[in-house]
Length: 321
Image (cartoon, rainbow, N blue to C red):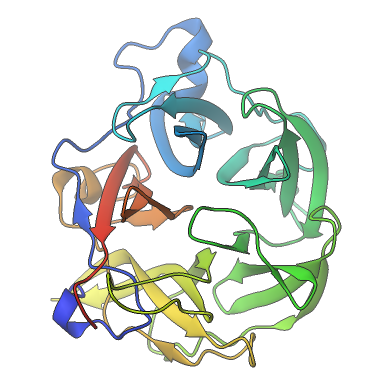
């Protein structure tokens, strides 16, 4: 399995990505206190948006019982993050998420922050996971709105390169789901979501399961090229290479004229586990992303590594297609 390089990428695809040399950028406390046990021993799968030159991050922390909460951190340079509190900013508190809140996606719209995350009810009969939503005016104090889509996970709202949600034909759009049970939903107010129908990602049946991660439109891939109006949907999924299992990140293209059937896909991942902190951990050989931001002339991808720590990979615009 080869990682996608610049020469191999089609004009619509973003990348190639290079890891930050000082990864990981956020880890669990070495010696947890009573206040920080919620994020020990794992910190991973962040959502990030830049507002007013400040990087705002929501991240998933998991305790020793594998119950997840969501913490917040900020940075002025994108590399060094400081936690805003020793306590989670979104905790398991509703019947739909009392066994964990996981994998936050973070967006900024109309002077408010919006988060979509997986709520785990722990139900033993029927559905036990939903896509939940929360809203904040400052990125630190959050109000839970509850489930917006039932029995599913992995919300990927279509945004511009800066992480601001985009209306297409009058609607905000969200790709969501996993392992072939994947769909497109729409909303006019960013709170009430209606499923449009199933989505075909065009992946061969021989591939392992996959999850939707991030969807971006109105973006550029080269320094001199035009703006792409189609949608680049990042996915994460199970692949095999050299006789070994990986959970890697790749990209799929959707045309605006056909939002639910993939027009193209990459034949190799843009990021797969290579570094020790990606190979060894709670879930070995795994990378997973919840965000993608274009800022300071490059793409910033913050990702979970081995479900244990948070890494950063960046990609400048290519010189040409």
